[in-house]
Length: 296
Image (tube, rainbow, N blue to C red; front, side, top):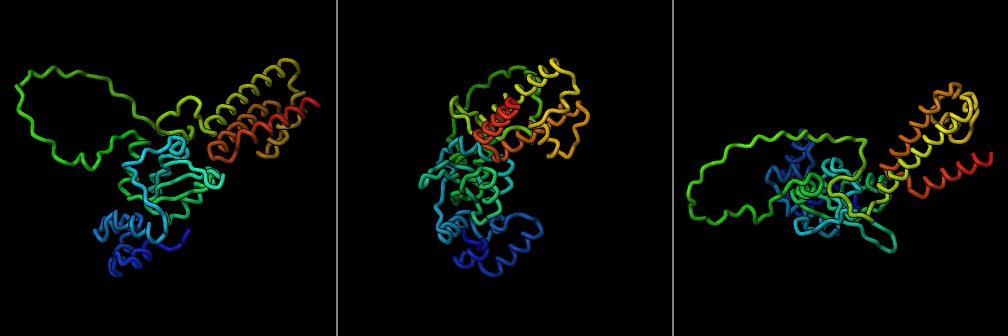
């Protein structure tokens, strides 16, 4: 992807003057807002002008998010907070030359940092599209937060209706207020509409697999504890030795075994959410560990 900046591209396209760019940069440094959004807010350019300039200069297609229905498998790949931070929206999953890519609508396709982070956390190559800022934010509100977004036609005044006869107002109904929703960083990546059965993403299936194996581990530990004294557990090898090395803790006290295992499963869940672990890798490593324990 080109490493030019938005200001340079707009100057090359003669969409703004040098004076407008300097004023935009000054406001951008004070507010921290992205330069494209700053220039739009200052009235130097319109969203359409910015999108056209980026599309032509970078050779990237534009996408009309207002007329596009995204794939939920793609939407579930990224968090709402990340999309809001970088003004982007995942649209679809596509295959190019046998390799799966994530199509992402971006108000600033030159945001290389965001692209690299997406590719790192999802393991997929990003195929960027250009989209106006308002349509990107509208898609985030609609598909992540379930907030209805008015279409352009919704701003037109509705036709006048004949006045109706006054109706006696019903007494107000008091309903209990719903508790505010709290976003938990430790929750799964899945946000928005739930996937239909059979279409669970790799991360959700891996999360379920991790939970199941964690329960199995707890049951085995309980059975082993009932069958032999605690002192024998301190001499066990395999995963526990690896956990000792990983967390830098000695296992002289058998009571620390449970704490180490809790940290192990928490680490597995974090790696799954970050896209750093696949079902196959997780299953293969634990199955190999089980075989080694059985042989010993």
